[in-house]
Image (cartoon, rainbow, N blue to C red):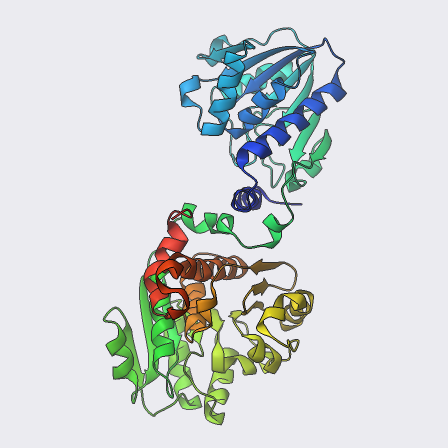
Length: 480
């Protein structure tokens, strides 16, 4: 099964893979026409009640495959308000082809003609809530008619994810849905057909621009904060992670670092807020204050960049995770302690192939071979109980049940620091989205940022270059 939101993402990913919406709409319309043929013999009277979105567009296409039927098309609203270019083009094709079409300007006067089959193409899977006018009146007319009702993708007024309705909804006899079954259709008293419309399996397996729809459409929460616990032997890594979090949605980005390196980290960017603690490395005695700070402000923590692997630092990382109950991205030096910690925290772990092996995951012979071990990495994530982002040429993102592959990126990303920008990007997104979704979006955005820079940087890319490109990768035009 597939949710309505995920279906929208898969559609967009299919387009990015070279299967345009126009092609998918042709396949969808053909599938609707087949459902009509199954419901009635040639010569039967068919009334198409269409909305102004792509659901209506699917039905417009279907009409062109039903020339041996008596078909009338009833558009709810004015044709100039059709909301997508592709649906408008298919409406224009009907008008120019001299099909019987009408625009319904006033739902109160809308009456269906005598017919054998009604095609309900008013609203698709992306619309929820009670029907408004003119759809509400049209649904009542459809339900009162003595005809077989074929709904396109989902009966109008039915929530595709839950099967619930608020007020009037179309009572369908048949539903033709696309690509995969929607969860809400299981509860309907209707014959449901799942039509294969040619979406490649890679549109679901590979992370693509469609996976960015949640961040492009959604509002981020106020006061989203990232809290990077890093630094000691190294200073650049925590600074990169903290700046990356700002570029991907965090309103404030803090770095907790030893007093010996805090001024250096602060010098990288005036946008960072650096909080120092005593000593030259993270030690167990600093943990209670760090945990208290992170939980008091509901921060998304990035634990690991630049910490080093001194015994007391690893013990401190273990203690932090044991006491912390919020959201955290675990990277670099902190990763080896994760399998041995019982934690209530929600974790996204971002190991490279060598760090993955140290955590107890599969040993991968080369970065190019990581994708071949995707099933083993999924099993490892299931045992670990956390989201894992295994970094290589192709990144593997898995929560132990779902697994995606991100192929975005360039050869220039082998430079040091790109993993730190990835960790920060996950944190910036984790303030508003679930862990698996955040990890998918961050891996794609980090790689896409490198692609946007490739013409100028090639293999001379620096991790710091990604910071300016990340917002464009997340919110910008994918064709840039």
